Amino acid sequence: MENNNFEYKPEENTTPNGGYNFENEEYDFENEAALAAQKSIRGYRIVIIILALILAGVSGLYFALNREQQADMRLLEIDRDSIQSNLTSLIDEYDALQYKNDTISQQLAKATEMIAQLKNERRLNYNKIKAYQKEVGTLRAVMKNYLRQIDSLNTINKKLTTQNVSLRKEISTANLRADVAEERASELQNKVQQGSVLRARDIALTALNSHDKEITRIKNAATLRVDFTISANELAQAGNRPVYLCITSPDGYLLSTDAMPTFSFQGSKKGYSASREVDYQNEDLDVSIYYKGSGFIPGTYKIEIYMSGNLIGKSEVAMR
Image (cartoon, rainbow, N blue to C red; front, side, top):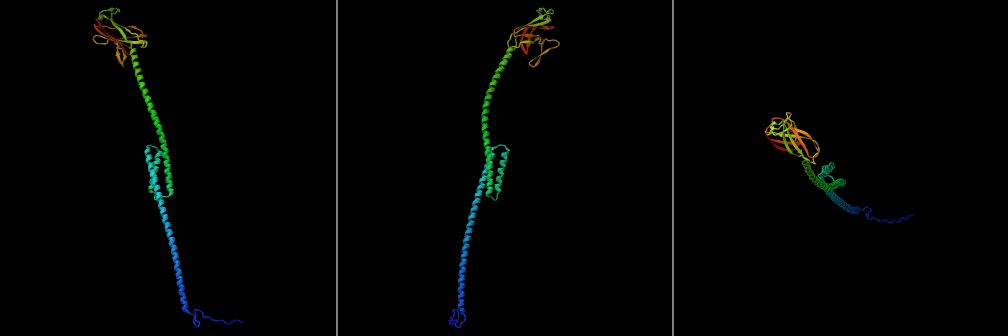
């Protein structure tokens, strides 16, 4: 049989008459609310601290990234300025070349265009900077190649100039020698020409009558005979040559025939009295030339003898 000796013990929150003590219960709710509020405040504080730490970290990271970005931009700007300086230097060097060359002109235009692009560039990045640096390197390589070629050409030009100066000196010396030789040759030729001119000596004038007899009175003469000797000359050219005789009367008239014959003398035509051809063999040659006429008067007659374009002899003879 069950033990019914159950001892009833009133709970703490019950009244003596068995009712529930609501005052004690209300007091417990307030404590629990206070405890919950304290826990909630501590939680908020922890969250706020965490958020503050996160915000501080994000801010630090932002400022670090910002500083890094600014540093990168500064480096990019420095690189851009360096590229511009290199391009300007290249342009000056291209201008200094002073050579009219299509390729050089193209490279110069390209460098000028790159400077304009850099000045107008608003957003720089490493790829663009690398591209510009590559282009500058290419332009610099082309410039160095041209400078090597120009140095080589200058070296060759200096050698050629030296050789040219030497050759000019040699040519000048040779020309001087040639001039001297030519002058000497000309002198020798003149001497030969002068030495080769024949000379007529022992010139005489004789009056003849119609029977070819010598007479003393010229007014009775029908023919005048001029006798002379062509001197021997080894330098003169041997062979047949014409000889021209000019007789001028005392009154100053050239004695000639009605035909008035002429011969060439010093680029002009000259009248003569009579002529004949002789065979000269570089030895003394006696020659006589006859002039037929009438009306001769006493006085001094001038006689001139021409041969091979030269006056080889002259004389004045008084006739009675």
